[in-house]
Image (tube, rainbow, N blue to C red):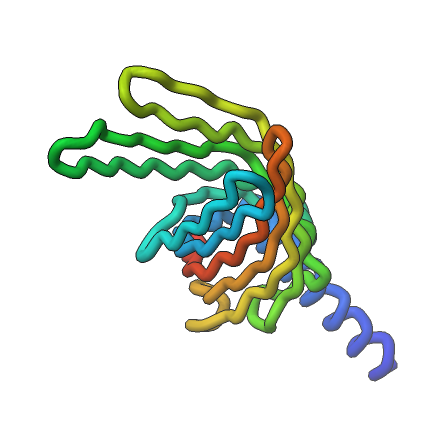
Length: 169
C-alpha cells in the first residue's frame, strides 16, 4: 500500500514539474565573440550584448526563441556602419529540470545585414550551437554558454555566446 501511495505522489510531482515548464518565457541577452573563417575573415567582440532574445517553452524539452541584435558605429570622417541580425532558434534541452544544469542544442535561421556609405546588403543564414544553462535562484535565472557555427552566404563563422536568462516562473 505504501509503495502505491509513494508511486502516486512521485508521478503527481513529475506531472506538476512538466506542466510548469510549458508556457514559461525565457528572456535574456548574450555577449558574443565571432571569428569569420572565409575571405574577408572578420573578428567581432560584442560586450555587454550581441543580441537580446525571448523564448517560449512549448514543451518540457523544446523552446522557440526569436532573437535580435543591432550595432551602430560612427567614426569622425568615415561613413556610419549599421549591422543587424534577427532570427529564430529552437532549443532542444536534454533535461526537463530548470533547477539543474541543462545541456541544449540550438539550430537557428537568421537574417544578417549591414548598411554603410549609402549602400546596404542582407543575407539569410543558418547555424547550430551547443551549450549549457547553469541555473540560479531556484531556476528563476540561469547563466548560459554556447559554442556555435554559422553559415551565411559563402562565409563560415565560429562563435561563442555567454549570457543571462530570466524565467517568468
